[in-house]
Length: 526
Image (cartoon, rainbow, N blue to C red; front, side):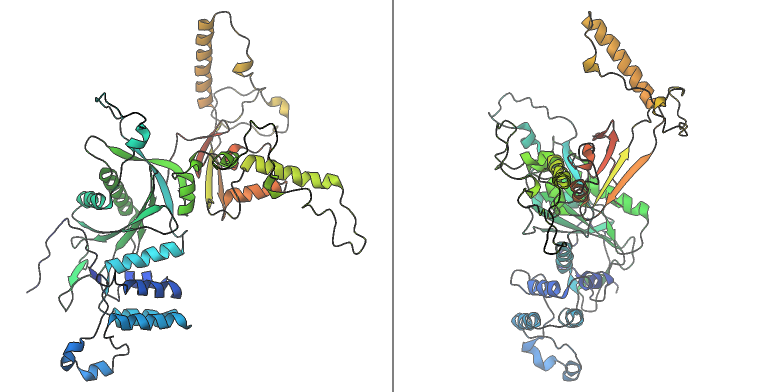
C-alpha cells in the first residue's frame, strides 16, 4: 500500500537523506578541492557530527546474515567502525592522489545510502569559505517602520535610543519565527554557522519544492528511510554581523531552470519572512536597501559593519584608527612619510647607463612625488592593493542636467547642438553663489525672494535635458586601481571627484551636482 504524504509546515530535518546519485550532492562535492573534501569528510566523522552524518558500516555482530558472494564483489567494502574510516581518510591526507578516488569512495562506498541535509550544508559552506567571492551579497539596513513612542517617563541615564532599537537575534527563536512565515507548499532547511575569521554568523537557507509542485520532492527508499530527491532546489545565504544594524543577503541560486518571475517572487517572500522574524510585538522592523553590493564578506564588514569605516572612506579613513596620533590641530606635521615614500628611497640614478651613472634631474622626481602626495591626501590609508576590503564593481549614474547655452531656450528637453562645443563663448557664465551675494535691507523679504528663486531654479533644472551617463568600473579592486592611476600621474588627484576615491562608501551611486545622492537607491542582484 503506498504511503500517504500529508502537507505540513514543519521544516526539513537535518537528518533527512538525499540519494548519493542526486545532482545536488554531486555538484556540491565535485567543486571542492581534494584537501577541502578530505577535511570535510573528517569533520563528518568527528564525534560531534557522526550522529547526524552516520556512514555505511558493516554489521559485525551479524556476520552470518551477510552474503559473502556480494561482499567479495564490493569494490568498497564497508568499514567495521568509525575509527577505521578515520584512519583511512587520514592516510589519504598523507599521500598524494586524485580527487576522483575520494569522491568514488564517499558516494559509492562509505555514504552509498545517501548524505543528510546537514552534510550537504557543510559542503556548501566549505565551498563558500574556500571561494569568498563566489556569492554576490547586498547589504540591508535594519530600521523601524515608524519611530518608537515610549509613554514611560522613567528612563535609565546614558541609554542610547539607537543602540536599543537594534533587534537582538537569537538563533532558536529566529528559526522558529522563520519557519512560521514559510508557506506550507515549500520545504526549507536552515543551518547556522560561524566562520573563524569573520565577526558574523551565516545562515544557509536550502529551499526545496514540496510534493504539490514536484512529484519526486519526497519519496521513500527501499529500506524505509525518508529521502529527498531534489530536482529543483535553491540556496540563499543570510549573514548577520556582530553589533551592526545590517543584514547581508546573497543572490538566489538555483540548480535547475526556473522562471525569473518565480525566483523573484520567492526572494520577496523570503525577504518578508526575515523582516517578520526580526520584529517583535510593538516593534516592527524593516530592511531598507543600501547602496552597497559586493562579492566579499570582508568588504561588507568594512563598509557596512560595526566599525568606524561605515561613513569614513577615502581620505577620511585616517580618522577611523583610534591609535592614530595625527590630528589637524597639530602645529608640527606628521612624521610618517606619505604613502611610504621618502626622499632617501628614491633612486636618482639609472642602472642602465653602465659604470658612469647619470643623476636624474630633480624636476622629474617632483612629479611622481606630488602625485603620490595627492593620492595619500585623497585616499588616505584606504584603497591599498593588499587590502581585502576592495570592491569588484562600482556603478555610477550621472543625472546632472546639461549646461545651458546661449541661444537655446531654457527648459528645452531636446539635446543641444554640439557643433560649436569648442567655442566656450556659448556657455552661460555660472551664477554667483548665495554666500557671495550682498546682504539685503529686509531679511524677511530677502528670504522670501530667495526661496522663490530657488523654487524657480529647481523647476527649471528639472525641465532641462539630462544625458544618460553611466560609468561602470570593474576589477579586483576598483578604487585601488584608481589610486594607482593617481600615483602614476594619469589622473589629476586635485580635480578628481569624491565618488572616485570611495569616500562615499557606495558601490551603486547616483551623482547629482557632483555628489552622490544617497537617497535614491535601487539595488538589483543579477
